[in-house]
Length: 296
Image 1 (cartoon, rainbow, N blue to C red):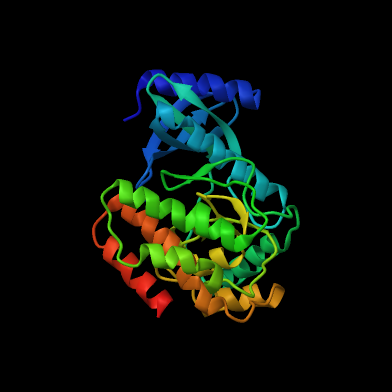
Image 2: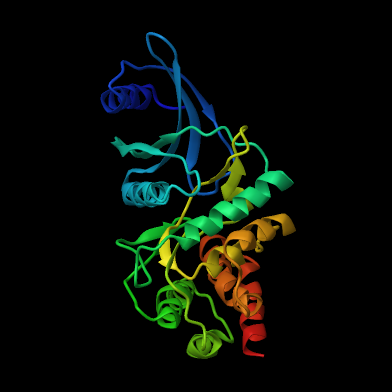
């Protein structure tokens, strides 16, 4: 149950942002996330109801929400694939919040998976940076994700992705038999691969994509940066996959380069290390196995 003071504060803020007089009506919890609380909020106006999606976390997590809003805005500005439009963010007492457009999501079908592939390829084709990184740090889950501008992709992945996650893991007591060797070998593993910077979602697994009732694909909960487009393609296979029609749709717009299948394990290692840092457990041994395979 949301505190009454918070719902009243949100009604005031949204009334100011939307230039309409909103009165709080209902808050329906939405499950599925591990990091934030989420609700569907409905407000009354003089003529109709307005519905929004809200994420809540501790007050000190506001910068996480602000970075997410910036990433969603940047994807939306490409006019390629639908994302929930950010409405506002802020802090009320102990809560940080992010209010977004409410997108009633339905499951993907073969047709919408194909269209999702096409739209993602269109996003990846957008030009806008000559370097890898982003204008600010953001988060992957709740883990800080540094995005310093780097002109060399192998260096970016070595230092700001795998190296950063390995250091976080060591601080938590994690020990990886192959960590140092793998880190040293990243330039070799990525040699002769010179991707152009693409705006990537950054956390594109099956739980962060769906479709509207109209059939329009939607992606959400991003960890945006300019990177190798293959990081998104790799993660689509990590937790269940999007099915062959998704990749057919993608390649109809932007053909996948040779060697992508070999690189995907290196890219997905980042997410497995992050899951270890977030949740512990068997993700540590899974990461070590992946590193051993990459060095084989």
